[in-house]
Length: 381
Image (cartoon, rainbow, N blue to C red):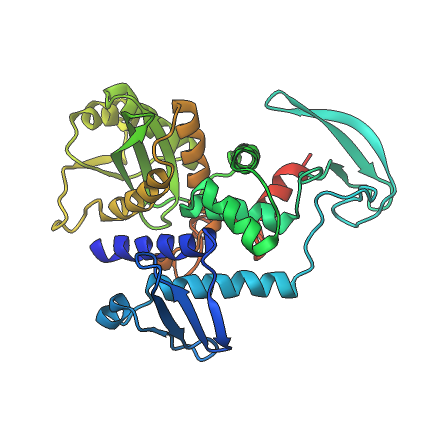
């Protein structure tokens, strides 16, 4: 568990180096100098681009011989640079006529409207392919679709709003306030969250539930997570002020609704609230019956290790935000993190697949999964 957390810490620190504007100094295609984050007069030499074997002369790499934050920052910077040079960005703000997202035809007619969570949207019908769509989700937003989805990706990887702001100016030359950046995050997080609620993952027979304390405006609140063991799909998450039976029961109820099923085994820690909540949500006189495995330790064959690793990743997201000011804000952010975890983030324990793919939710997302999710969520009628 310690190794996983340390690896995640280095990734966050590596992204942060680029986000705050400390770009690598290029010597040649395989050699770079990265400024030290603790000594302004020192630079670390990173080598190996294009050869598959990376090295750095910093103490961290010399001790571990694994990617340090300096190597991670160079890899991240090269990846972004490659995308900028080789991909034609999708225009967001443009005076060109809107086109059908399916066939790109500019011949369409208005066809009523639809309401989604109280928000009214104009619906269009394409005269060429006869399909229906709504207005381009990125219209009137400064920049391009890659920039907006990069904002989403960096935010849920744990980069702060102001560092994202600095990153966009340094790499893309786009000046956007941190307030505007957060408005994008909130807007598209909500769009995605409303869309994915319709999908039921194919869950296994064993689920894990755990709770962790997070900071919300100086007050300690509780983040609950329920995950399927085999697919690593996060079935539910909930933020509460206490750890009551009703709170635990709500976590179980949401998980059942998400999976449209119940597990044979539910693994939790020793919190007493779980006991009655489990009986209320899962107990039945009919067979097969769900079994509650409570208070398992790390040494036990069945334990909650996989959720401890998830909690470590979630803690990095909340730590960078330095406390979320409102419960509503905290809930929205962690719902967005759940969707990032389930649909966007490749999972090492799943051979690079996402939990949604493992759970047989095939949305056929492109390489830029954020962009695919937002467009699928916005265009469907």
